[in-house]
Image (cartoon, rainbow, N blue to C red; front, side, top):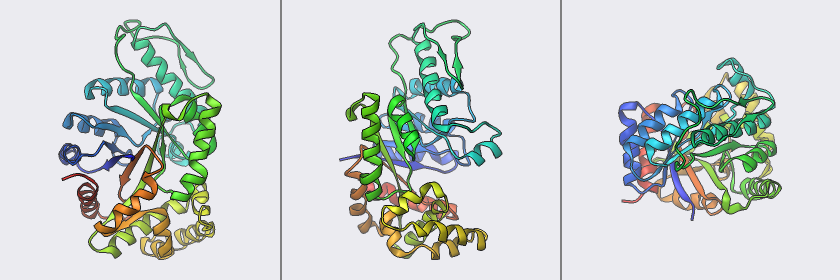
Length: 339
Protein backbone atom coordinates (compact mmCIF):
# COMPACT_ATOMS: atom_id res chain seq x y z
CA UNK A 1 0.00 0.00 0.00
CA UNK A 2 1.35 3.38 -1.00
CA UNK A 3 2.14 6.03 1.55
CA UNK A 4 -0.07 9.10 1.39
CA UNK A 5 0.91 12.75 1.33
CA UNK A 6 -1.10 15.92 0.93
CA UNK A 7 -0.38 19.26 -0.70
CA UNK A 8 -0.77 22.16 1.73
CA UNK A 9 -1.56 25.72 0.79
CA UNK A 10 -2.77 28.79 2.59
CA UNK A 11 -1.63 31.81 4.59
CA UNK A 12 1.49 31.36 6.69
CA UNK A 13 -0.58 31.97 9.81
CA UNK A 14 -2.44 28.72 9.04
CA UNK A 15 0.22 26.63 7.30
CA UNK A 16 1.88 25.26 10.42
CA UNK A 17 -1.44 24.23 11.90
CA UNK A 18 -2.41 22.44 8.69
CA UNK A 19 0.89 20.54 8.70
CA UNK A 20 0.38 19.52 12.32
CA UNK A 21 -3.17 18.40 11.54
CA UNK A 22 -1.94 16.27 8.62
CA UNK A 23 0.56 14.62 10.96
CA UNK A 24 -2.12 14.07 13.60
CA UNK A 25 -4.37 12.52 10.95
CA UNK A 26 -1.70 9.96 10.05
CA UNK A 27 -0.48 11.23 6.71
CA UNK A 28 3.04 10.18 5.78
CA UNK A 29 4.11 13.51 4.28
CA UNK A 30 3.10 17.07 3.58
CA UNK A 31 4.10 18.77 0.35
CA UNK A 32 4.24 22.44 -0.62
CA UNK A 33 4.16 23.87 -4.12
CA UNK A 34 5.82 26.88 -5.68
CA UNK A 35 3.20 28.84 -7.57
CA UNK A 36 2.44 32.07 -5.71
CA UNK A 37 4.55 31.30 -2.60
CA UNK A 38 8.21 30.34 -2.26
CA UNK A 39 8.63 26.65 -1.56
CA UNK A 40 11.52 26.60 0.90
CA UNK A 41 9.91 29.07 3.28
CA UNK A 42 6.71 27.05 3.26
CA UNK A 43 8.69 23.87 3.90
CA UNK A 44 10.44 25.52 6.84
CA UNK A 45 7.11 26.38 8.45
CA UNK A 46 5.80 22.84 7.90
CA UNK A 47 8.99 21.25 9.24
CA UNK A 48 8.89 23.28 12.44
CA UNK A 49 5.24 22.40 13.02
CA UNK A 50 5.73 18.62 12.69
CA UNK A 51 7.87 15.95 14.33
CA UNK A 52 7.54 12.67 12.43
CA UNK A 53 6.28 12.99 8.87
CA UNK A 54 8.25 13.92 5.78
CA UNK A 55 8.17 17.46 4.44
CA UNK A 56 8.75 17.93 0.73
CA UNK A 57 8.59 20.50 -2.05
CA UNK A 58 6.49 19.58 -5.06
CA UNK A 59 8.01 21.44 -6.69
CA UNK A 60 10.93 23.79 -6.14
CA UNK A 61 11.79 25.48 -9.43
CA UNK A 62 15.34 24.49 -10.22
CA UNK A 63 16.54 26.61 -13.12
CA UNK A 64 15.89 30.10 -11.67
CA UNK A 65 18.17 29.13 -8.75
CA UNK A 66 21.83 28.33 -8.39
CA UNK A 67 22.19 24.61 -7.56
CA UNK A 68 24.55 25.58 -4.74
CA UNK A 69 21.93 27.82 -3.14
CA UNK A 70 19.29 25.10 -3.47
CA UNK A 71 21.70 22.54 -2.02
CA UNK A 72 22.46 24.79 0.96
CA UNK A 73 18.75 25.33 1.63
CA UNK A 74 18.02 21.62 1.40
CA UNK A 75 20.99 20.79 3.66
CA UNK A 76 19.76 23.21 6.30
CA UNK A 77 16.14 22.09 6.04
CA UNK A 78 17.16 18.48 6.42
CA UNK A 79 18.99 19.39 9.63
CA UNK A 80 16.08 21.47 10.86
CA UNK A 81 13.58 18.67 10.22
CA UNK A 82 15.68 15.83 11.59
CA UNK A 83 16.33 14.22 8.19
CA UNK A 84 12.70 14.47 7.09
CA UNK A 85 13.14 16.82 4.13
CA UNK A 86 12.69 15.96 0.45
CA UNK A 87 13.68 18.57 -2.10
CA UNK A 88 11.53 18.03 -5.17
CA UNK A 89 12.89 19.77 -8.25
CA UNK A 90 10.99 20.75 -11.36
CA UNK A 91 11.97 22.35 -14.63
CA UNK A 92 8.68 24.21 -15.30
CA UNK A 93 8.19 25.24 -18.94
CA UNK A 94 10.31 27.48 -21.12
CA UNK A 95 8.04 30.53 -21.26
CA UNK A 96 7.61 30.64 -17.46
CA UNK A 97 11.30 30.24 -16.72
CA UNK A 98 12.32 32.87 -19.27
CA UNK A 99 9.46 35.37 -19.00
CA UNK A 100 8.71 35.26 -15.28
CA UNK A 101 12.11 34.40 -13.80
CA UNK A 102 14.46 35.80 -16.43
CA UNK A 103 16.45 32.55 -16.34
CA UNK A 104 17.86 30.23 -18.99
CA UNK A 105 15.86 27.27 -20.26
CA UNK A 106 17.64 24.98 -22.70
CA UNK A 107 18.42 21.24 -22.76
CA UNK A 108 16.16 20.81 -19.70
CA UNK A 109 16.91 17.11 -19.09
CA UNK A 110 20.67 17.62 -19.29
CA UNK A 111 20.40 20.77 -17.23
CA UNK A 112 18.45 18.91 -14.55
CA UNK A 113 20.91 16.00 -14.53
CA UNK A 114 23.82 18.40 -13.96
CA UNK A 115 21.81 20.38 -11.42
CA UNK A 116 21.32 17.32 -9.20
CA UNK A 117 24.97 16.31 -9.58
CA UNK A 118 26.05 19.83 -8.60
CA UNK A 119 23.82 19.71 -5.52
CA UNK A 120 25.25 16.36 -4.47
CA UNK A 121 28.74 17.80 -4.84
CA UNK A 122 27.86 20.60 -2.41
CA UNK A 123 26.57 18.05 0.10
CA UNK A 124 29.68 15.91 -0.26
CA UNK A 125 31.83 18.99 0.36
CA UNK A 126 29.80 19.68 3.51
CA UNK A 127 30.75 16.20 4.70
CA UNK A 128 34.43 16.94 4.14
CA UNK A 129 34.92 15.05 0.89
CA UNK A 130 37.42 16.32 -1.68
CA UNK A 131 35.12 16.47 -4.72
CA UNK A 132 34.44 18.81 -7.63
CA UNK A 133 31.81 18.99 -10.34
CA UNK A 134 32.68 20.59 -13.67
CA UNK A 135 29.78 20.12 -16.07
CA UNK A 136 28.90 21.78 -19.34
CA UNK A 137 26.23 23.93 -17.65
CA UNK A 138 27.00 24.00 -13.92
CA UNK A 139 30.25 24.03 -11.99
CA UNK A 140 30.97 23.51 -8.29
CA UNK A 141 34.75 23.60 -8.01
CA UNK A 142 35.22 25.55 -4.78
CA UNK A 143 34.13 24.42 -1.29
CA UNK A 144 32.59 26.74 1.28
CA UNK A 145 34.26 29.91 2.52
CA UNK A 146 35.84 28.00 5.40
CA UNK A 147 36.89 25.09 3.21
CA UNK A 148 35.43 21.56 3.26
CA UNK A 149 32.88 20.88 5.97
CA UNK A 150 33.20 18.48 8.85
CA UNK A 151 29.69 17.00 9.08
CA UNK A 152 30.91 13.53 8.24
CA UNK A 153 27.97 11.78 9.88
CA UNK A 154 25.20 13.89 8.37
CA UNK A 155 22.59 12.19 6.21
CA UNK A 156 22.06 13.68 2.77
CA UNK A 157 18.72 15.22 1.88
CA UNK A 158 16.60 13.23 -0.55
CA UNK A 159 16.14 14.77 -3.97
CA UNK A 160 13.26 13.90 -6.29
CA UNK A 161 12.80 15.14 -9.85
CA UNK A 162 9.49 15.94 -11.51
CA UNK A 163 9.37 14.22 -14.88
CA UNK A 164 6.89 13.75 -17.71
CA UNK A 165 8.90 12.76 -20.78
CA UNK A 166 11.49 10.01 -21.26
CA UNK A 167 14.56 12.26 -21.17
CA UNK A 168 13.69 13.81 -17.81
CA UNK A 169 12.70 10.37 -16.52
CA UNK A 170 16.18 9.10 -17.42
CA UNK A 171 17.77 12.07 -15.65
CA UNK A 172 15.74 11.30 -12.53
CA UNK A 173 16.51 7.58 -12.66
CA UNK A 174 20.23 8.16 -13.00
CA UNK A 175 20.77 10.93 -10.48
CA UNK A 176 17.81 11.36 -8.09
CA UNK A 177 16.35 9.40 -5.20
CA UNK A 178 12.88 9.42 -6.67
CA UNK A 179 10.50 10.85 -9.22
CA UNK A 180 7.50 13.16 -8.87
CA UNK A 181 4.67 12.27 -11.24
CA UNK A 182 2.52 15.12 -12.54
CA UNK A 183 -0.99 15.14 -11.03
CA UNK A 184 -2.56 15.14 -14.49
CA UNK A 185 -2.44 11.41 -15.11
CA UNK A 186 -4.54 8.27 -15.42
CA UNK A 187 -4.15 4.76 -14.06
CA UNK A 188 -3.72 3.46 -17.60
CA UNK A 189 -1.11 6.07 -18.50
CA UNK A 190 0.73 5.23 -15.29
CA UNK A 191 0.80 1.47 -15.82
CA UNK A 192 1.27 1.44 -19.60
CA UNK A 193 3.72 4.31 -20.05
CA UNK A 194 5.14 5.87 -16.90
CA UNK A 195 6.14 2.84 -14.84
CA UNK A 196 7.66 0.87 -17.76
CA UNK A 197 9.64 3.99 -18.66
CA UNK A 198 10.92 4.30 -15.11
CA UNK A 199 11.89 0.62 -15.00
CA UNK A 200 13.75 0.95 -18.30
CA UNK A 201 15.56 4.10 -17.19
CA UNK A 202 16.58 2.51 -13.88
CA UNK A 203 17.91 -0.56 -15.69
CA UNK A 204 19.98 1.69 -17.98
CA UNK A 205 21.37 3.43 -14.89
CA UNK A 206 22.17 0.11 -13.21
CA UNK A 207 19.79 0.78 -10.33
CA UNK A 208 17.10 -1.35 -8.73
CA UNK A 209 13.50 -0.33 -8.27
CA UNK A 210 13.93 -0.65 -4.50
CA UNK A 211 16.48 2.20 -4.61
CA UNK A 212 13.99 4.63 -6.11
CA UNK A 213 10.75 6.19 -4.85
CA UNK A 214 7.90 6.67 -7.30
CA UNK A 215 5.68 9.49 -6.06
CA UNK A 216 2.51 10.30 -7.98
CA UNK A 217 0.31 13.34 -7.68
CA UNK A 218 -3.46 13.06 -8.03
CA UNK A 219 -6.05 15.77 -8.73
CA UNK A 220 -8.34 15.28 -5.73
CA UNK A 221 -11.66 17.12 -5.32
CA UNK A 222 -14.01 16.19 -2.48
CA UNK A 223 -17.38 17.71 -1.63
CA UNK A 224 -20.76 16.65 -0.30
CA UNK A 225 -22.01 18.37 -3.46
CA UNK A 226 -20.80 15.96 -6.13
CA UNK A 227 -21.38 18.44 -8.95
CA UNK A 228 -19.12 20.96 -7.24
CA UNK A 229 -16.25 18.48 -6.95
CA UNK A 230 -16.67 17.28 -10.53
CA UNK A 231 -16.77 20.82 -11.93
CA UNK A 232 -13.56 21.74 -10.12
CA UNK A 233 -11.86 18.62 -11.46
CA UNK A 234 -13.06 19.44 -14.98
CA UNK A 235 -11.62 22.94 -14.74
CA UNK A 236 -8.25 21.60 -13.64
CA UNK A 237 -8.21 18.87 -16.31
CA UNK A 238 -9.09 21.51 -18.90
CA UNK A 239 -6.25 23.78 -17.77
CA UNK A 240 -3.63 21.01 -17.90
CA UNK A 241 -5.13 19.56 -21.06
CA UNK A 242 -4.36 22.66 -23.11
CA UNK A 243 -0.65 21.80 -22.91
CA UNK A 244 0.48 19.65 -25.86
CA UNK A 245 3.07 17.94 -23.64
CA UNK A 246 0.21 16.18 -21.84
CA UNK A 247 -1.50 14.85 -24.97
CA UNK A 248 -0.09 11.41 -24.14
CA UNK A 249 -2.15 11.35 -20.93
CA UNK A 250 -5.35 11.82 -22.93
CA UNK A 251 -4.08 9.25 -25.43
CA UNK A 252 -4.09 6.59 -22.72
CA UNK A 253 -7.87 6.41 -23.18
CA UNK A 254 -8.05 7.51 -26.82
CA UNK A 255 -8.99 11.08 -25.88
CA UNK A 256 -6.28 12.82 -27.92
CA UNK A 257 -8.77 15.14 -29.61
CA UNK A 258 -9.46 16.74 -26.23
CA UNK A 259 -6.12 18.56 -26.39
CA UNK A 260 -7.07 20.45 -29.55
CA UNK A 261 -10.63 21.03 -28.33
CA UNK A 262 -9.46 22.48 -25.04
CA UNK A 263 -6.83 24.67 -26.68
CA UNK A 264 -9.51 26.08 -28.97
CA UNK A 265 -11.94 26.74 -26.11
CA UNK A 266 -9.15 28.22 -23.99
CA UNK A 267 -8.41 30.75 -26.74
CA UNK A 268 -11.95 31.49 -27.92
CA UNK A 269 -13.41 31.87 -24.41
CA UNK A 270 -10.42 33.84 -23.14
CA UNK A 271 -9.78 31.31 -20.39
CA UNK A 272 -13.36 31.24 -19.18
CA UNK A 273 -13.46 28.42 -16.60
CA UNK A 274 -17.11 27.56 -17.21
CA UNK A 275 -16.55 27.14 -20.94
CA UNK A 276 -13.43 25.06 -20.36
CA UNK A 277 -15.17 22.80 -17.84
CA UNK A 278 -18.08 22.31 -20.24
CA UNK A 279 -15.65 21.04 -22.86
CA UNK A 280 -14.51 18.19 -20.57
CA UNK A 281 -16.81 15.13 -20.72
CA UNK A 282 -17.94 13.40 -17.54
CA UNK A 283 -15.95 10.26 -18.32
CA UNK A 284 -12.73 12.30 -18.39
CA UNK A 285 -13.16 13.06 -14.69
CA UNK A 286 -13.35 9.33 -13.97
CA UNK A 287 -10.16 8.80 -15.94
CA UNK A 288 -7.95 11.73 -14.96
CA UNK A 289 -8.95 12.77 -11.43
CA UNK A 290 -10.37 11.56 -8.14
CA UNK A 291 -13.51 13.62 -7.60
CA UNK A 292 -16.85 13.22 -5.88
CA UNK A 293 -18.48 12.77 -2.51
CA UNK A 294 -16.42 11.49 0.45
CA UNK A 295 -17.87 7.99 0.13
CA UNK A 296 -16.83 7.80 -3.54
CA UNK A 297 -13.25 8.99 -3.57
CA UNK A 298 -11.55 6.39 -1.35
CA UNK A 299 -12.03 3.54 -3.79
CA UNK A 300 -11.06 5.70 -6.76
CA UNK A 301 -7.69 6.53 -5.25
CA UNK A 302 -6.71 2.86 -5.09
CA UNK A 303 -6.54 2.75 -8.89
CA UNK A 304 -3.44 4.92 -8.65
CA UNK A 305 -2.11 4.10 -5.18
CA UNK A 306 -1.77 0.39 -5.82
CA UNK A 307 0.96 1.03 -8.40
CA UNK A 308 3.28 3.56 -6.72
CA UNK A 309 5.22 4.12 -3.50
CA UNK A 310 3.65 7.41 -2.50
CA UNK A 311 0.56 9.34 -3.63
CA UNK A 312 0.23 13.10 -3.21
CA UNK A 313 -3.31 14.41 -2.93
CA UNK A 314 -3.80 17.94 -4.16
CA UNK A 315 -6.95 19.90 -4.88
CA UNK A 316 -7.86 21.80 -8.02
CA UNK A 317 -6.75 25.41 -8.06
CA UNK A 318 -7.64 26.77 -11.52
CA UNK A 319 -10.36 29.38 -10.83
CA UNK A 320 -11.28 27.74 -7.52
CA UNK A 321 -12.03 30.32 -4.78
CA UNK A 322 -9.65 30.24 -1.79
CA UNK A 323 -12.45 29.38 0.63
CA UNK A 324 -13.43 26.36 -1.45
CA UNK A 325 -9.77 25.29 -1.77
CA UNK A 326 -9.59 25.26 2.03
CA UNK A 327 -12.82 23.27 2.27
CA UNK A 328 -11.42 20.73 -0.14
CA UNK A 329 -8.17 20.46 1.81
CA UNK A 330 -10.09 19.92 5.04
CA UNK A 331 -12.13 17.21 3.31
CA UNK A 332 -8.99 15.49 2.04
CA UNK A 333 -7.50 15.51 5.54
CA UNK A 334 -10.67 14.04 6.98
CA UNK A 335 -11.43 11.46 4.29
CA UNK A 336 -7.94 10.11 3.69
CA UNK A 337 -6.46 10.60 7.15
CA UNK A 338 -7.05 8.67 10.32
CA UNK A 339 -9.32 9.73 13.14
